[in-house]
Length: 138
View 1 (cartoon, rainbow, N blue to C red):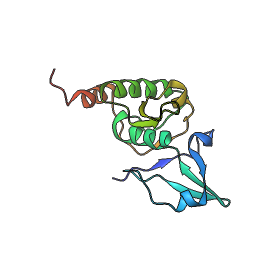
View 2 (tube, rainbow, N blue to C red):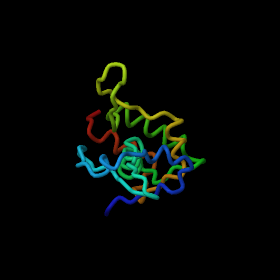
View 3 (cartoon, helix red, strand yellow):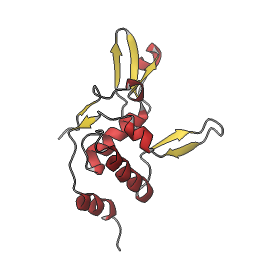
View 4 (cartoon, rainbow, N blue to C red):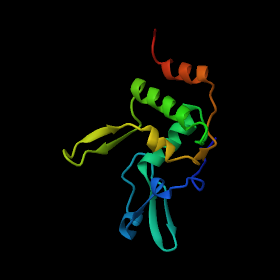
């Protein structure tokens, strides 16, 4: 099954899309996973890496298919556990050192994405925890 998502209900679209140049839009993708791009009213946009990685996390391993006002704490808690046990899903360049560093989602960064939805898997708390720890013999 293909992973589908909807970002139209995210109130602050700047968390979803970043404006890019026409040259960036036409350039080849340098990422393992292609970034989603679009043109709206003649302006070129690319999905932010934070949004892109969050979509994949919701769809594949957090077991929550959408972020709402009622569950963003739960999404954050699962992401927090996942990032500490498995590893963060993305990296970003530290502007001071120029080095790539892990990016950890904050509760505010999850809250900013309220309205994001996917057709991803739904997991109970037990299924989520079992899936997270299934690589470890304990």
